[in-house]
Image 1 (cartoon, rainbow, N blue to C red):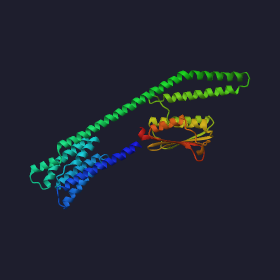
Image 2: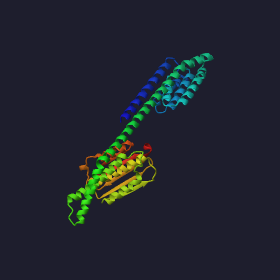
Image 3: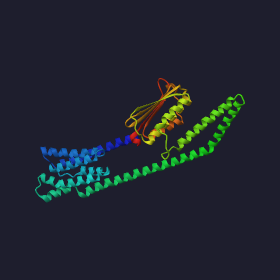
Image 4: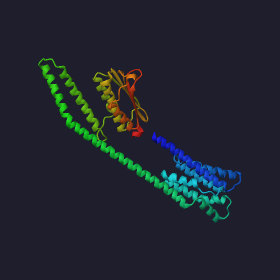
Length: 375
């Protein structure tokens, strides 16, 4: 949103500059007391066009460079001895945009055409024509405008490179911290949970072998141990998931749906569109969205069915997970860590996530991941 406000301010600023330059050129042209003939009116039009064209300098710098160059040659040929202020602004904008060769070529062409335009305007003395052309467009000012644009372009490039370096450093530190947390969790919890799981399994086995009733508390401990083991394994997998390890992606979504079906949930998978390769980050995020959604359905939704829908679009991968659980618009659940994690992953790729109860009952999770941007 802040960027949008900046673009509006930049557009207003461009128009103010364009109007100011056009006004200055017209005032200078009017001070020459030109006649109101067709040629004079053409000169005034070219003065205005040359100034107003600067409003588009940020969007089309090369086109504005050509328009202002033709304008200055045109009004010089019409007999208006007015400095090429608009062309200098256009040279600065084109150099800032990185069009160095085009800018140099157009500048040389304008410098060569101005003496000819002065001769066409009625000057018969070649020296006087060159003097008028030199007054309209000083080479020193032309070089200064080009140098200023190039200097600002290089400064912006250095700033962008510094920003990218900071982002890469922050990402690397986050990866290192994530792996550190994974190691700590593995070292501190895996062994203890494994002991609980093995001991509870053994106790249940011994009790059944002796023909004794198995206490409900012992069965609960066994199930809790199994669940904790699965959760820890999934957590460690997510923490270790980075670009250097083979990640889970869209090819593994079928396994998620089958696993959900084995747990008692009637889950279906529908794939639409023409399948095509997607960036690794998009596939990983899609897998995580489906995984977290199915996990939430199994834990909290008290649902009997769930549907996973994946739509391959030309520039977007659309994912939708619906269930027939107990969620209603009047009793929306509080967003948990899993939902926040999904939203962060989707937003990081420039996508959109919508997770909310459906009007007909149940819950829906919809994600749209831009394919081109993420690649």
